[in-house]
Image 1 (cartoon, rainbow, N blue to C red):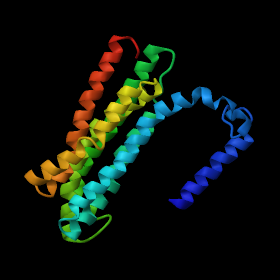
Image 2: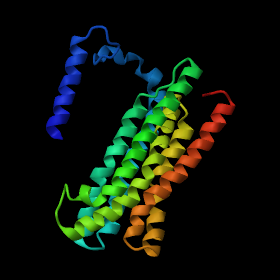
Image 3: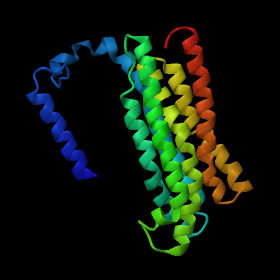
Length: 239
């Protein structure tokens, strides 16, 4: 990761230095208008930053809960997080391209098309992961007990991906439109506010395997809230 990140950063800097047509710049003289836009930038970026920060906290708490059980369960959880990153990052990448435009009808069509792609890919991952969970786990480790744990976790955790495939593009839309309140509500719901209490509840009701059901429940609730907020904005002709 360090080498790839360094290479990517160097390539980005090279593009900025060589392309005179881009509006992006690293020149300090262009910072003179920072004070005019800094509040707007922070208000839009804060929900996203908070979500990623809460994600770290949530993962740490989840790892702590899983660590109470067998070592193989901890290893299996690490394998599952690698596998479910595939549909997650696909949704994040597609969401980044769904920025609002001046043409509202075109914006809505682009949003529906982008969400259709992310949902279709997520559903494909759900089918593949459900059918071939043990085989996918064996790509990382050959221990039978770890594979059994990983397959059980994966089949539960992947259920959240279709919800994420819709929720992430909606959060991106809120942020791009400057709707700080809506994006902040959805971001906090997804990580930090609901998942930790649910961990306590589901781990008690369904030891170990209940931890894998937390994210699907949280993402379903977040999606419902996001849809309600989005529908309200549509009624006011904001989107």
